[in-house]
Length: 115
Image 1 (cartoon, one colour):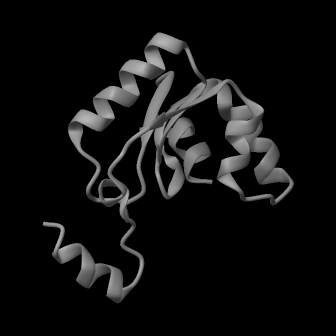
Image 2 (cartoon, rainbow, N blue to C red):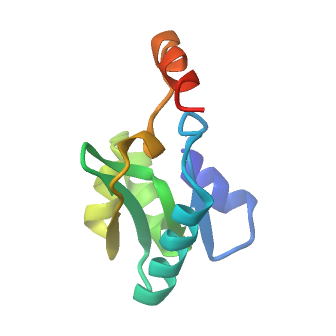
Protein backbone atom coordinates (compact mmCIF):
# COMPACT_ATOMS: atom_id res chain seq x y z
CA UNK A 1 0.00 0.00 0.00
CA UNK A 2 2.89 2.35 0.76
CA UNK A 3 4.35 1.87 -2.70
CA UNK A 4 1.03 2.63 -4.37
CA UNK A 5 0.47 5.65 -2.13
CA UNK A 6 3.95 6.97 -2.87
CA UNK A 7 3.35 6.96 -6.60
CA UNK A 8 -0.11 8.51 -6.24
CA UNK A 9 1.27 11.37 -4.12
CA UNK A 10 4.45 12.09 -6.09
CA UNK A 11 4.58 13.12 -9.71
CA UNK A 12 7.71 11.26 -10.77
CA UNK A 13 8.73 8.20 -12.77
CA UNK A 14 11.03 6.59 -10.20
CA UNK A 15 10.96 6.52 -6.41
CA UNK A 16 13.51 5.27 -3.90
CA UNK A 17 11.87 3.35 -1.08
CA UNK A 18 13.44 2.38 2.21
CA UNK A 19 11.62 1.19 5.32
CA UNK A 20 12.01 3.36 8.40
CA UNK A 21 13.28 0.31 10.29
CA UNK A 22 16.37 0.09 8.06
CA UNK A 23 18.44 3.06 9.25
CA UNK A 24 21.97 2.00 8.35
CA UNK A 25 21.92 1.89 4.54
CA UNK A 26 24.80 4.03 3.31
CA UNK A 27 24.54 6.87 0.81
CA UNK A 28 27.06 5.06 -1.42
CA UNK A 29 24.80 1.99 -1.53
CA UNK A 30 21.81 4.11 -2.55
CA UNK A 31 23.94 5.72 -5.26
CA UNK A 32 25.01 2.29 -6.55
CA UNK A 33 21.40 1.09 -6.64
CA UNK A 34 20.42 4.20 -8.61
CA UNK A 35 23.34 3.82 -11.04
CA UNK A 36 22.44 0.18 -11.73
CA UNK A 37 18.75 1.05 -12.00
CA UNK A 38 19.47 3.66 -14.66
CA UNK A 39 21.97 1.49 -16.56
CA UNK A 40 19.69 -1.52 -16.79
CA UNK A 41 16.40 0.36 -17.27
CA UNK A 42 14.85 -1.92 -14.66
CA UNK A 43 11.39 -1.49 -13.26
CA UNK A 44 12.74 -2.38 -9.82
CA UNK A 45 16.27 -2.49 -8.44
CA UNK A 46 16.75 -3.78 -4.91
CA UNK A 47 19.52 -4.88 -2.58
CA UNK A 48 20.57 -8.31 -1.36
CA UNK A 49 22.98 -9.24 1.39
CA UNK A 50 24.32 -12.70 2.22
CA UNK A 51 21.43 -13.31 4.61
CA UNK A 52 18.43 -11.86 2.74
CA UNK A 53 16.85 -10.11 -0.21
CA UNK A 54 15.67 -6.62 0.77
CA UNK A 55 12.53 -6.22 -1.31
CA UNK A 56 11.68 -2.75 -0.02
CA UNK A 57 15.12 -1.16 -0.23
CA UNK A 58 15.52 0.12 -3.74
CA UNK A 59 14.28 2.00 -6.75
CA UNK A 60 10.85 1.41 -8.18
CA UNK A 61 9.72 2.68 -11.58
CA UNK A 62 6.10 3.77 -12.00
CA UNK A 63 5.61 0.89 -14.46
CA UNK A 64 5.36 -1.38 -11.40
CA UNK A 65 1.95 0.10 -10.49
CA UNK A 66 -0.20 -2.49 -12.32
CA UNK A 67 1.46 -5.29 -10.35
CA UNK A 68 1.12 -3.36 -7.09
CA UNK A 69 -2.57 -2.76 -7.77
CA UNK A 70 -3.03 -6.44 -8.61
CA UNK A 71 -1.52 -7.70 -5.37
CA UNK A 72 -3.45 -5.07 -3.42
CA UNK A 73 -6.74 -6.14 -5.06
CA UNK A 74 -5.97 -9.81 -4.40
CA UNK A 75 -4.83 -9.01 -0.83
CA UNK A 76 -1.55 -10.80 -1.53
CA UNK A 77 0.85 -8.59 0.37
CA UNK A 78 4.17 -10.22 -0.46
CA UNK A 79 6.37 -7.44 -1.81
CA UNK A 80 8.92 -9.93 -3.08
CA UNK A 81 6.31 -11.13 -5.58
CA UNK A 82 6.51 -7.78 -7.38
CA UNK A 83 10.12 -8.43 -8.39
CA UNK A 84 9.15 -11.73 -10.03
CA UNK A 85 6.53 -10.04 -12.20
CA UNK A 86 8.53 -7.15 -13.67
CA UNK A 87 12.01 -6.50 -15.05
CA UNK A 88 13.92 -6.43 -11.80
CA UNK A 89 17.53 -6.58 -10.78
CA UNK A 90 19.08 -7.43 -7.47
CA UNK A 91 22.35 -5.82 -6.46
CA UNK A 92 24.53 -7.71 -4.00
CA UNK A 93 26.03 -6.07 -0.93
CA UNK A 94 28.38 -7.84 1.45
CA UNK A 95 27.44 -6.10 4.71
CA UNK A 96 24.36 -7.57 6.43
CA UNK A 97 24.60 -4.94 9.17
CA UNK A 98 24.03 -2.15 6.66
CA UNK A 99 20.56 -3.59 5.97
CA UNK A 100 19.81 -4.44 9.61
CA UNK A 101 16.12 -4.09 10.52
CA UNK A 102 15.21 -2.55 13.87
CA UNK A 103 11.89 -4.21 14.71
CA UNK A 104 12.02 -5.11 18.40
CA UNK A 105 13.46 -3.67 21.62
CA UNK A 106 16.28 -6.22 21.37
CA UNK A 107 16.98 -5.11 17.78
CA UNK A 108 17.14 -1.54 19.03
CA UNK A 109 19.67 -2.49 21.70
CA UNK A 110 21.74 -4.28 19.08
CA UNK A 111 21.50 -1.32 16.71
CA UNK A 112 23.06 0.97 19.32
CA UNK A 113 26.26 -1.07 18.93
CA UNK A 114 26.22 -0.40 15.19
CA UNK A 115 26.41 3.36 15.63
